[in-house]
Length: 222
Image 1: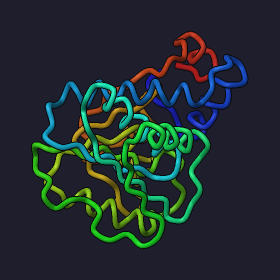
Image 2: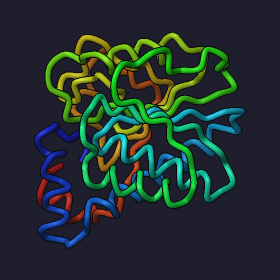
Image 3: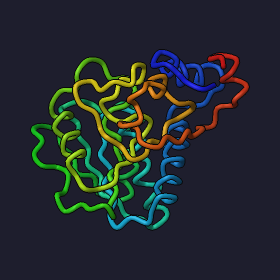
Image 4: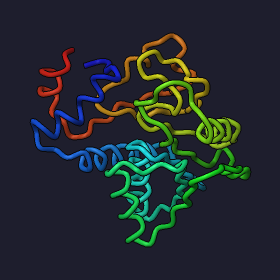
């Protein structure tokens, strides 16, 4: 399997649960482990800031923060809720952090300057703001945060897809995170094949999350 569309991605988690009995929380854990490997491979980093949204992409980032802490690596976590309820798996990972005593800076209303201006090229921003399910143009406060990420001097690692990218077309939805690396799950996204996609994704690494390749081929083709 070379590329997956947004619709196929939507089906992956559903079929993994229905046919294989693998819950989304376990897939999220496996995804986060892959991101941690990439962080450790590209480091060491002086400072890591993980920027999370309210969806499962944000849940990946919350899990990354916990797994980094398990390796003795501290990370600052910014959670932009925009008044929205977290998805169940993202909420579970937020609860894990709370019970562990690991801090999360939660933003529920207006977003000021969230991304520290002191970040340099020795620092890393992990983009877990918006995932593959984006519809329409990116709106505030997320558009504001994306602009702050792009204005930072830090290196940027996007999780699954750069926030703001339409994963089918590879085009920005008004604005898009410009990443140095993207760790994407199961397969590259259809939009990554677009001529201009690399300026947003940077170098792409595909991370497997525990789904057998034979099963994926059977359901999603080659």
